[in-house]
Length: 57
Image (cartoon, rainbow, N blue to C red; front, side, top):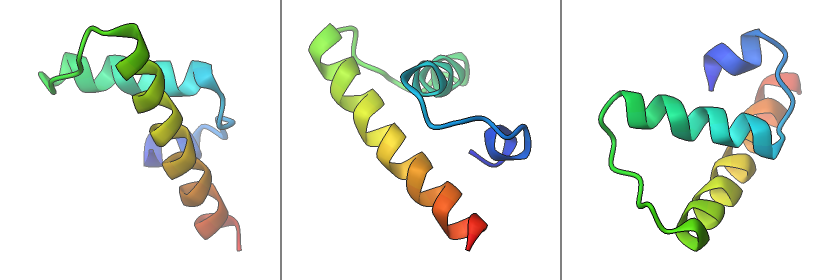
């Protein structure tokens, strides 16, 4: 998240997909189910928004 924040990336589903892709590249298990991936992306977005807010205050 720090890298994305440093690049001024917005909290979008595209960004969440990129986070998921990076996690998979690092051998983190991400389920292949589309519904689970959507939920995971939603949680990542919420966390990234909080990350942005904490650093912007």
